[in-house]
Image (cartoon, rainbow, N blue to C red; front, side, top):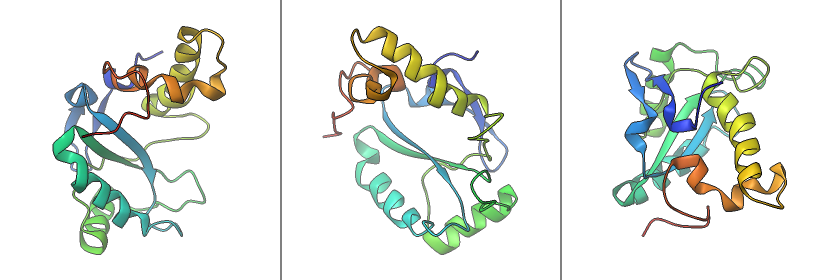
Length: 151
C-alpha cells in the first residue's frame, strides 16, 4: 500500500520523474484524460481553469488513461503533440495510468485507500460522503473543506 497521494512519484509525458509532493499545499484537480473521447474538448476548459488559478495555489494534473473504451491509444509523444497543438494544453501531463482493474498506485490511492482512510477519520461518515470533509487528506494541506477555493 502506498501512502497519501502526495507520496507518489509519477513520470511526465517526457519521461522525467516528478514527485507529487512538489504540489504540497496546493489544491489539485487530478483528472484522467483521453484524446479520442467525446469529452476531449474539455481540455479547453481544464486549461482555462488551470490558467485562471495556477497563480493562486491550484493545478490541474492530467493523467491519460486507455481504460475507458480504448480512447487513449497514443504514445506519450503523440499525446503531448495532440494536447499542445489541438488544445494548447500547458497544465502538467503525465504518463498513462490504469484507473480500472489492476490500478496504477496513484489511482489505487485516490479511489480506494484515501476514501477509506478519510472516512475512518471523519466520525459518522461513510466512504460515499468523504470528499466534502477531507481536502486535507487529499492534498496534505490544512484546508478543512473541499469547498475551499483559491483566492
